[in-house]
Length: 219
Image: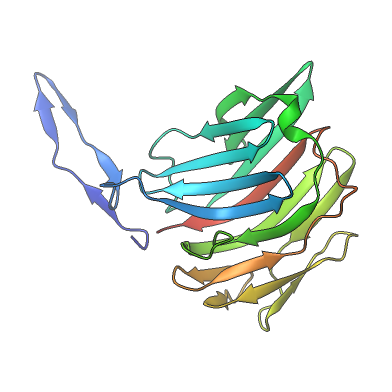
């Protein structure tokens, strides 16, 4: 934890040597919600696990979808993460790390139908039962026609962060969240989360969308 790693002893087999590196504490598969968009009949969720994975989920009355990254993707290190759903004859969902595709999967178009938005949170779930610890330097969400929100967390103080896109939305810091001097937020893993502005009803996901964030994720 806190950017620590475990280096296992080298194992010699015949004439070559294998050295294994594993992120700290890989013993369980506990899931911590990083982001959740809750709607009238759909939830969009990004989770992390202690197996050093990211999981992107959509649950809805039209069906469920899950995209799981490979293990050991480096959540303790600073990376740019992106989840991109695009339409090119069929809908596909891809997870990127620093512009590298980690996994891609087809998704049913019915799951992406529009819905009324209820809440959008970073760092916890809607029941406030789990909290994630780590640093986030920016978050943005777009669809092919517009930027839906873009937060760079440059304020450095206070309990609000302001959208730098033309949407002019406002996010609120709750609980154990503190500022990084240059730009960004630190989540304590106990009470801290960010409440993002609810997306308007006329924001559509059916023509594709992208969620991007940069940070270190370290429960």
